[in-house]
Image 1 (tube, rainbow, N blue to C red):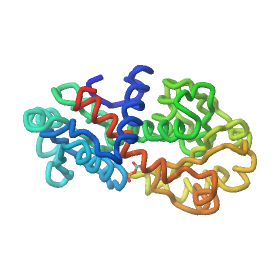
Image 2: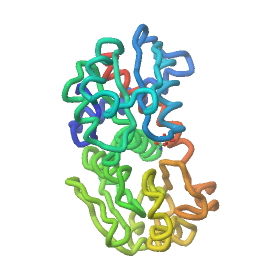
Image 3: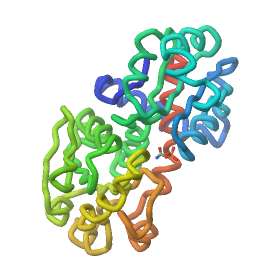
Length: 294
Ligand code: CP
């Protein structure tokens, strides 16, 4: 495992290994993690805003003894001031890892194709594999290490987060259900059970997943999307159709009152904030494997 561009590039064993390292590092965190990334630097390139990804990678590198350099699109001019390949060839001689949040997924593939150091997808138009690792870790916290036989119902847009979640579900033996409008179906090679009625979709769900109806870059479509996605709000009525033990996940940021209600997000079934905290732990596991040789 050299890079993390998509979850589907990982084997089930690699997926489980990263998650196991993540759990170990979290268990050992209170006593202080070993500085396994001492002397190592992760370059972090952002074309889009971020809270969780930015903070969790920077804090994760710090806790493992490494450091980060944060680069913005304006200063780098990636793909404009210089090519993606030239950027990567320069970076690989200076830092030990590259993390990038980009609009165009092809940029990540171009980086990985020439990079001698690990390249990590921190969200693209196609996928969000780091989020999926934290999602799986949160489900393991609830249901145990072996998630096989469990069911996740993703309610809403068949987007990049859904695609990576479907992929990690396949690796871990979890059934993935998508419930969304006909024109917003998830395109993926991973197995997907498609159930249009959200109430029917959550009937056997162990986890219900909500996400924004309007992703970054789709602001022009906001009014139309809010109308078509209205029946797919994760609210108390929907939760009542799920098993009592079902937990609720959301990758955040949440638009409260739109795709998820306050009552659900702040209610007893919500694992949204532990899930956000697991971004730190899951990515520490990933960094330890890719940059620390664990
Ligand atoms: N979920 C997620 O990736 O959050 P940020 O956009 O804040 O990084």
